[in-house]
Length: 89
Image 1 (cartoon, rainbow, N blue to C red):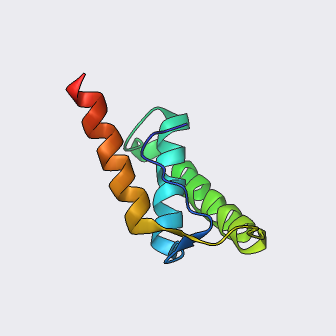
Image 2 (tube, one colour; image 1 turned 120 degrees about the vertical axis):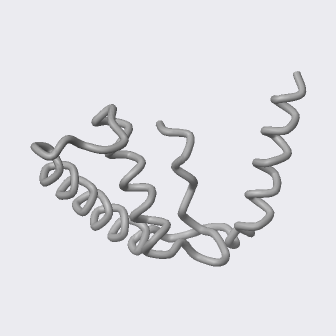
C-alpha cells in the first residue's frame, strides 16, 4: 500500500471528505503507476478516484469503533518520531 495513505478510521477529529478523497487519489495513482494520467486516460482515472472515494466514505460511515478515538495530532507526532529514528540509522 502507498505510504502516503494515512489511516482514516476512529480518529478525533474524524476524517474529512478531503482526507478520504486524497486517499482515493493516492490509491489510484499507485495502482495506475502514474501521478498524472495522459489526456486519453483522464476520464478513467477521475472515475476511479470518485468510485473509490464513494466506496471508502460508505465503508468509514458503516464501521463501528470498539475503542475510543485516537488523537490525529498524537498519531502524526508518533509517525514523525518513527521517521526521525529511522533516518538516524
